[in-house]
Image (cartoon, rainbow, N blue to C red; front, side, top):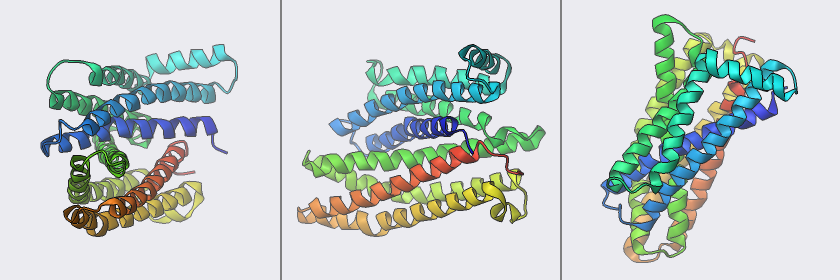
Amino acid sequence: MPDALLVASRLALYLSLALAFGLPVFVLQAIEGDGSGLPIVRRLARLTGVAALLALAASGLGLWAMARGMSESGDPAAVRDVAVLLLTQTSVGIAWDIRVAALLFAVGVPFLGFGRQPVRVGAQVMLGGVALATLAWAGHGAMSEGALGWLHLGSDIVHLWVAGAWVGAIVALIVLAFHAAGQEGPETVRLLSGAASGFARFGTVIVIVLVVSGVLNYLLIVGPSLDGLVHGLYGRLLLAKLGAFAGMLVLAAANRFRHAPVLQRALDDGDTSAAIRTLKQSLWAEMGLAVLVLALVAWLGTLDPTG
């Protein structure tokens, strides 16, 4: 049986870090579309700070869960000793230190007065990207050595970034749809319509990069054989992850080719309530599958792929 606390902390960490990176990436696109002055954009920037704060808490919980599992003891003193050992003498600990430092800065950025908003959001993107990339050192991507190890690590980092951009965009679109449905103003509805269409096009690049990096990671972890997909718990969970990912692709395609164009036509007609409601339902379903994918990834990271 998996360590429930470890899996839960990894899920919380993956989700919060994905938002800490993906939300400001989305906001940058909104700013480029001349939406920087809208209240909803400022809310998304503050939500990024909240995500960074949650990631800090999840990092602490994950460290404790990892140390507890390694110590094989419930004694707080023994767990603390293992945690100190992890932080000071392992690459996982160094990555943890870098992540926490980046997140501490990211938490404060939305509330600081320096620079224009694009500068602050750009700082959030960089800090969130650094924090998200540190997850690669705690996964299977760090098990290879030499040039192959750097290739594996780089592939993992790119995979994390594009996945984070996707998850952040889904949540941002849900927030936009919520406020648009609340009649916050036609500007928010137009921003939702433009963002849904714009992200749908950008999503094609995300999907291609996810598929390529995912296949590369599979080859580096399990090997060219497909036996790893049909034997053992790791293979079954990986197949479940692929199934959930396929479901996300179907919903993303529906958003791009059906719901976003319908919203645009409804915006031209002046009655957007039904189109927003349909898009919001699709986004919630897509987010549910994204959480399932992240949960399976959190579980997979605790397993031996060859076991």
